[in-house]
Image (cartoon, rainbow over all chains, first blue to last red; front, side, top):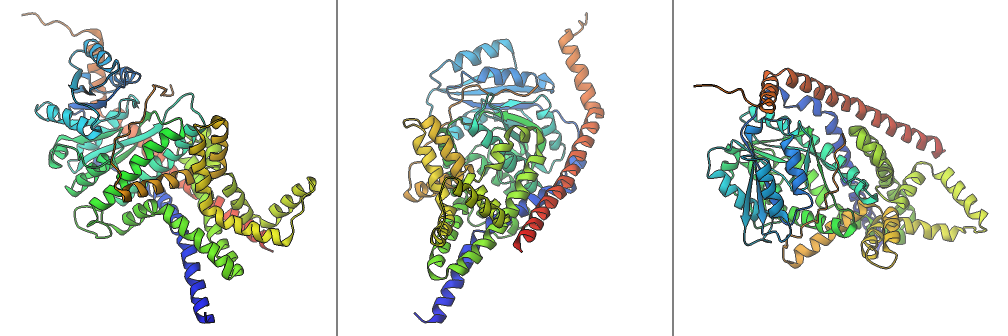
Length: 499
Length: 63
């Protein structure tokens, strides 16, 4: 190969390494938008409103949680005469029907039990059964769709309905918080993730004027909006809530995220449960990307789904694992061609990583300080222990190397320059290698000593890389055309709302 | 024809509804929410300052 070809190849590889910085830069942009949220609040068009609201709850074997959820709904700071709870029992085989019937007797006129004899077809089918009944009657003016395990704070519903005073608003969603008590290491990671994915990301979407997804556990629609989008949910995908959100905005109605309406949800307490839930979400996102392929990066009047900012943020998240693998592979290739250039490219990537880590972690903990107090350790270790070590080394290379050499010399280990060279290669490989370790955390969970080994591996590999590997697995399933099975997350009633 | 007074629980709820619809609580809540959102802008500035401190540290240890 001529030297020109090698030089060109080197710079292509450097460019591919820097592709890994794209999602980081966009994440910073998204969080900067949060700071501008106060300028885009919708409160000037809000007013106290108490439309007659049908609350639709799909329930399949939810005996452990449904009773408590109904009791909490009856404590809502909302006129009881304007509330009707429709629980669609999806052919449950446990005591769910008995619990619902008991609640219907306890709250006459407020709780309605609907039964599907053929169940297991998925959430969208169950919701559609309820929607058919509810829309057949003129009573309903707004509909709240929620999950059976979600606990609403008393003021949450009225804080959502006040936005419907603006006829331009079709749907409103709330801030879903992780509510398992006592939680474990995984629910604390999810607690932190939800501040970033809900409290922060949805505020930034309010600023952009486009919301990606109404939370499945808290979506309020006006009757007019529900009718405008056809009165039924999409049953062909695993992301019926995201499709509803897109259709709402395509119909010219606004979607609002109300960050001060808080609801609490039970989240998976083991990696297996998380894997099922997130793979469903990730596959749903791939399906949505395909279904609305004509929208991306094509700004149109009436909605902002085609805006450049929204498209960049959507694809940055969707393609994150591929970008990381691309950056890693390019760094390794560059290491063998021109290790000095590899080191320089790596340095640029990691300085951007440091900035992102410090800004997003600190700001996220500030956004929801009450959750932050509980999950700050998981926040700091979100990228994994080794990635955090690399981040600290990127900021303070001299002191960290000195400390490392001292610590190793205490156990009579010395590092030769050749070993430093291979250590450098290890840090490059780790960019994607952390995903493998995070995957091992899932694999070992159900094996011997899994309860001990799996969390250790997750802290080493990182929760963020685990989400990446789940997304990657979802791509593969979609490419293989695997059957879209509604793999429901098991709920046990561990949600406890703070007093 | 006699009119019976609604039960106590119902009367209390009607009173609460009147209070909610009057907008006093609503205005107070909106003001608190706006204050919180403005506070987030200040918190973002603090986070940016933290980033600048880290960059400063990096520059100090570069030499």
